[in-house]
Amino acid sequence: MLNKKVASFIRQHRLLRPEGHYLVALSGGADSVCLLLVLKQLGYSVEAIHCNFHLRGEESDRDELFCRNLCDEQQVPLHLVHFETREYAQLHKVSIEMAARQLRYRHFFQLCQDLQMDGICVAHHQDDVAETVLMNLIRGTGLKGLSGIRPRQDFNFVSNNVSVSPSDSQVLHVFRPLLCVSRDEIEDFLNGIGQKYVTDSTNLVDDVMRNKMRLRVLPMLREMNPKASENIVETAENVAFADEYLERKVEDDIRGLVGENVFPEASATLSIPIGKIENEYVLYRILSRFGFVSPQIKQIFARLDAPTGTVFCSETHTLVFDRGCLLIEELEKIPFREMKIPEEGIYRIGEHARLKIERFHREDSFQIPREKHVVALDEAEVSFPLTVRRLRDGDRFRPFGMKGSKLVSDYLTDQKRSLLEKRRQLVVTDSRDRILWLVGERLDDRFRIKDSTEQVLVLISE
Image (cartoon, rainbow, N blue to C red):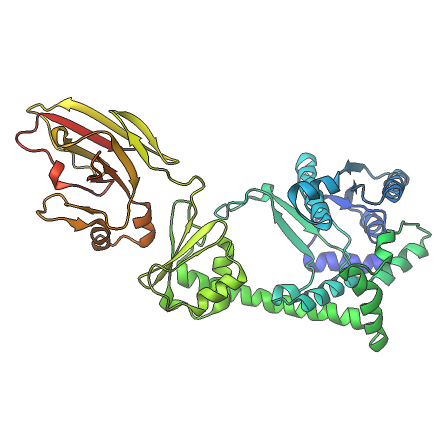
């Protein structure tokens, strides 16, 4: 009966392919033992993986030995891995539970890659869904939290860079074929075939929230309604369907705000028209992809009328209010540092740019360069050392062709440059801190080539 139920669930959710090859996460507990046996009986090609986290002393070694013996009996290939979980948790400053999760899923991914597996099957069941939904509800959650545990989940192991779109080979596919059955059904199945399993003693002590939910709350709910767990799971399914519909609607709204490319290249800026932002959740869905957290996003939404220049920062990105738009840009990995240039040569400026400085005698054939990344100066007017730096408040220069000076900020505003572009703007100054060149934009008229110019200084931004 349980086999048929699981087989129907796999077909309904299109989880596993008959010709596929899958890993099974085997702890030795009733759930994972049931999963291994059922998938084997249904004819799937499976291998097992057991993780020894060395957290429970002799009991951890007992579990490993049980899994060895079970896989030998069932003629299932077994892969073993040992983790120093406490040391990892201390080193990475995470909880023991999070450390174990990170260690096992990274290993699952690598093993699937090495063995060319189609994914890994884990043994979550109906009661796990009910526990998860109730815990999320207690903590406070949205629709995703109320959806519980989904039959399939994909983990991206390619990069932390949000602009990357992973290929299938860079994703761990996690399948949960037992979500259609309860813990009681699993134990009845194993008892019915005389199959033993091990019990994790830490699961019998109500010292953490999940154990309290399993040992105290759910039994009490079942006293009120024997189908409490089943009904919670059914509700989670309904919420999941509603969430999927909402997701499609939200994605349409996001594209309406920012176009198709929600993840611009690292050097690009994402612009969101403030006048089109009507829904806080849509804004949350966009900004959360750039590291902004819920309290920040609530504050941003509440202050959409904030003045130009208002700034919010996540760990990875900057958000700036600028003339009716929210501008989002990745933070510099290496902060820019101004550079002194004592003489001609080639200098690396920042992470990716170079500045080339050449000096030569002016010939009759000399032509003033027209490209924006090249500028020619009258060397007689320039005093070394030069400095390459970012724009500062109050900086002024005399734009080429003009008589009077102008604030560089005003000049860039006239050129429709955003606040973020202004912040990135480089200038080259001489020893008297006079701006020679607004890099990539405009030469200062005081240093232009004149009829009397004999020596030319050429600056090239690469």
